[in-house]
Image (cartoon, rainbow over all chains, first blue to last red; front, side, top):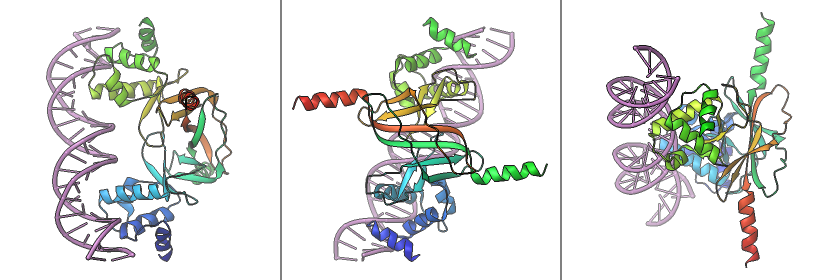
Length: 147
Length: 147
DNA sequence: GTAACTGCAAAATATTTGCATCCTT
DNA sequence: AAGGATGCAAATATTTTGCAGTTAC
């Protein structure tokens, strides 16, 4: 728990129960979380509004970032490196598994530079790929072997 | 208007006022539209619910597709070629202008193939780039000249 | 002690569903 | 005429705001 506290302090945030808990949910999860996931899984129950506000604070501070999804649900995931306040630079690919519904931040897959038409200037790129993740792909292979 | 009617017929849809109007809004707009844009700009006013249902029908038929956005608002845009029912294949890049807020489908910019970690199988990729569009970039240049 | 955070209530917004009526074919 | 589409009412879901009480520092 010490880590969580120091982490929050480094971002200039005061240490509160909801911030510790919600941050812990993110660090313990390999995937992205939706508002509802947090509401369900927090070991202590927080008000909906507190969760909204905590998430917003984390986004503003650069602790987490939102992920655009094809179905336009709102997902959040930890930023890998410290994103400066108000300046996110999450140059990695997001992957959403169609089967288990987990959203991964593929930190090591960098976003390719896209050649835009003349006049268009890119500032931020988001890539969201959906398909089958490693886990589910392995499960499928095993199932096929057992037929 | 003949075109609109034939177009709808080709998709097996009956011809109704809302479908004609909403389809026309899409064909007359170079950018993507949100539910609210349609509600405001339709020359005739339709019930909110009718707009929701019409958009859903169009998405199911492959006439329009949704665009994932960083702020998780819901945008729709025409599919370039006929997407088969239930099988969208919109392999183009979406561009959202930070200044004028227009969303473009850059039909001619194809999505680069991304090398995923072992085990991950891609089915669908979405790329959303934000920045300054051609129009706004030109305006900025002119403003600078006039200083 | 003060400023910031939380929870509750409620407002505002967005989306979905049921049903009676009307329109398209 | 029959099936589907629309409009209205209302249920449901999501997000935001105001405020009083509580907590962190």
